[in-house]
Image: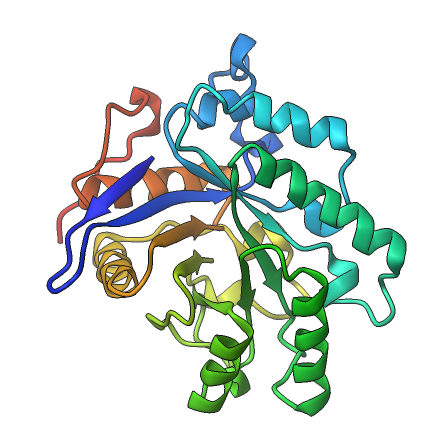
Length: 289
């Protein structure tokens, strides 16, 4: 769901708290009842409690229009609901991974969301190996030119992008900076509270340092993490700082394994005073320090 935070010297800001994806096999019997979400379906069920979901499936494949229209239709009962859409990996992770076909197809996807007032932001996630240099800045300029019609936010994983010149560069491009909370290993990005456009963004990946890198890890191990109370409090304070200079702030939890992202999003909203009556099976009341 969304929340209003009143900041000193600012007007009220809209903060949308949610998570990445809305249906994983390991959520059955945990997020959803044993028999699933019932007649509502996972997305309709989730959008009854939250006001934003980040679409991660678009990173792996560009969806057909009928699928996008179905997603939108299932959230119309919540007029405030927004989607943030992750850019197809051919644009961000693969050299020569896109051409005119991909540009047109992905633009059509974004337009479908935009037409119904459901597009919160286009998220461009770059890999850790995408370091700050001249060629990569040119690549980002090109992507901004391609997707100039939509609000764009970029997530850098490597710390070389964290400097004043880069932030000024993003402001000139009208590209938002995605703050991230992740394990603090090697030259990874630290937790920040930066805004370069009117759209603020924070992705919370968890702090599972022991399984973040390495040959023996996998997606489930990497994102199997629950935020304890002190860390959620730090996230809350970061959101309040970001919201001070933004019209909208999207807070996305990505620690999806076993429903952790759903429960942490609900717990953060509760800490922010914006919680609602959650399903009893979620057991999301935050512990006290």
